[in-house]
Length: 405
Image 1 (cartoon, rainbow, N blue to C red):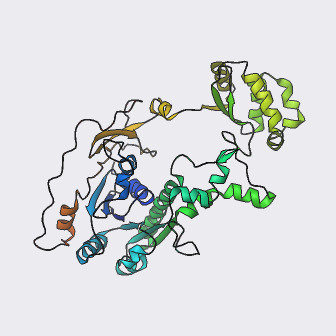
Image 2 (tube, rainbow, N blue to C red):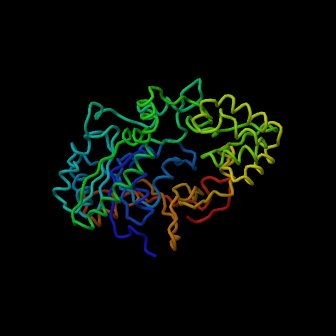
């Protein structure tokens, strides 16, 4: 089966995480993605060097793309990028606020010139408002939106352990591009979308915000517990291991009391009859659960939870994830050699296309110039020969065997 976006050309003037995530999803769906980098490369290439000298972020987000290193501030670079965009279906950019427009690549001007072009601008705070010129990175946005204030332990705010602001923004951008493609199929005309890191997390903060504005109180930081559902959190068992349980409705609460705790009378306790009551009396509820669980091994608790059809989970480490039997992996070729990484979340029926390679910096620049029109002088020096990726793995996963996406 042909991948759904196999006939599209995407040009992405990108760096860091949010825009590369959007274009990576488009590449996974079959689009031809040309990644336009600064002459020194996307700075995410140097975030770390843990994957055989390559950055973990970069190898995650840039498979299946073509790389062209371009100085868009030069006449040659500008002409080359315009040549690319003139043939493109989608143009994505996440440069500093105003940088693309100052270089002659403002989205409105591009769409006026290329009627079918879809443009996607990714910013920190959006194109309007008093913060539109502020620089934005993931942790800054987690703090600015209040996400850090409701994350962590009761004693200290915390950062969500992955770059959720970038990821949320990139996925929103991907969805927006797909919507714009659907609209173009109906109208024949491209459109512009704009996505910001701040808006992405602010929208995710809807529930805490409504709780604050309707009650005057924001959710407290509760560690490995849910702020508005109980019992929903981590509890110790007899051997010291913790198990996470989640009760989502009163039917589950009855089964939990009778089949897991073995306390039939607890169902009639007025302190715990409904979820709001259980939350109001959570201290007393936790004492009951801990007193029961601490008399049992984790395996016995898990058996009871499973038999009662109560949702549960382990408090796993990253090592546990690496060894998790449910983890699907895909092999990706990188400049440092093959890497086993988690497979993309979307599975397409009948499609098992291999993951694309992660490109060297400017690996495809000469070929792209030949295809879309050379931008340099006639006597431009050729690039040096590129090294060949080693067959040795850049890093060896400790976990499950590779599976296709």
